[in-house]
Length: 445
Image 1 (cartoon, rainbow, N blue to C red):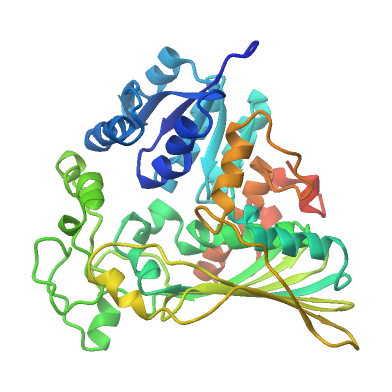
Image 2 (cartoon, helix red, strand yellow):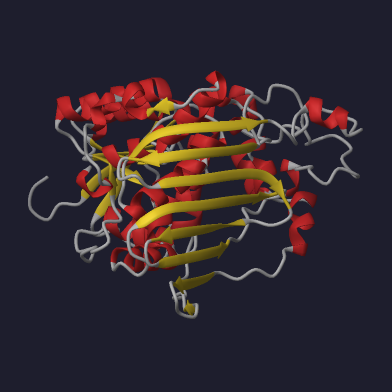
C-alpha cells in the first residue's frame, strides 16, 4: 500500500455483527482511510441484503459480492490489503489461513478459532507467511475494563494471587445461543469457547499472564429436550416461526421483526439455516452450565463459571492480591431479540456497574467508572478506531490483540472442552506448542 491510498478491506461473513462492527463504521466514520472492496458469504440472500443495506442506510454503492466457493476469486479480483473474517466460528481458521496465504493481513471476530488443532495451524500460517492477524476483543476497550487494567498495573492490590469470575447470561441473551448455530459444538466450540473466550482474554490481559493448565466441568442442565421433559415442558415444534407459540416465553418469531425477516427468514430458502430453533429441541451439543479452574504460568489461579439461563445478565470478577482485593461488577444490556423473548426481559433487575477496592487494614472505597457510548459498553467505537484509523491514539494499556493472544484465550476454552470429555486436567502446552515459554501475556503478539 503506497502513498495516501485507502486501505482496502474484503469481508467474509455478512451477518448483523459484520454490518454493525465493520461495514457501517468503515463507510461512515472512516471512508477517507479505508474502503470495502468485496463481500463474501455462503448465503446469496444475505449477500444481497448487505449490499441493499449499504445503499438504503448509508447511500453507498454496492460492492462486488462473491459466494463462499469464490473466496479466492474475490481476493484475486479485489486485491484487498486486509480480510475481515466474521463467519460462523467453525470456518474462521479456513478464511484466516487463505487470506494470509494469498498475501493479505486478516482481522477476525473472536474466538480466533474453535479448537487447538485449528489454532496450531493458524499460528503456523502466520509464522510462515509473515502476515498480520488481529483478533477483535472489544471487551478490552470498555472504560470499566480498561480502568481495572490500569489499577491492577499500578499495583493497587499488589501481586495478583487469585481471581474469581462469574458470568451470567439471562433468558433473553443466553437462550438465543440455543436457537442458532452456536448450539452445535462443531460450529462454535460451545459457549466455553465462543462466549468465554472474551472472559478468558480479559483475565489473561488484566493479570498479564499466560494460561498453563485447565480443569473443567460442564453439562447441558437447563436447555434441550431431555431437560424439558424432566421439568414437564412439552416440546411441540422444532422451530418457532409459523407455529402457535402463544404460551412459550422462549419463542422467537422471525416474521415479527423486519431485520430478522430480511436477514434470516427470507434467506432460509438458499441454505435451509434456521435462526429460530426451539431451545428445548434436539441436536443441542453444547453446555449451558460450565466451570473452570485455570492455573497461570505466573502462579495465579482463576476460578470461573458461566451459566446461560439466569434472571439477569452481567459479570462479577474479584482479584485477590498481596495487598488487598479489587471487585468489579459489570451490568450488561442484553442482546435484544424480537417478540415475547425480548418482552420477558423487561423485568431487568437494577444492577449498576461498580468497582470497589478493599485494601488490607484500611476501609474499602469505590472508584467511579467513566461513562461511554456505543456498542458493547463503549468498546466497539474505540476498537473500530484502532482497526480503521491510521491516526488512532497510542494505547498504553495494550488493548490490541494479535494471533498469540487470541490463541491464549481460546485455548483455555478448548482445554475446558477436553477436560469435560476426559475428566482430566489439561496442560495447554500439550495441546498447542507454538505459544512458547512466555510468562506474561504482554510478551505475546
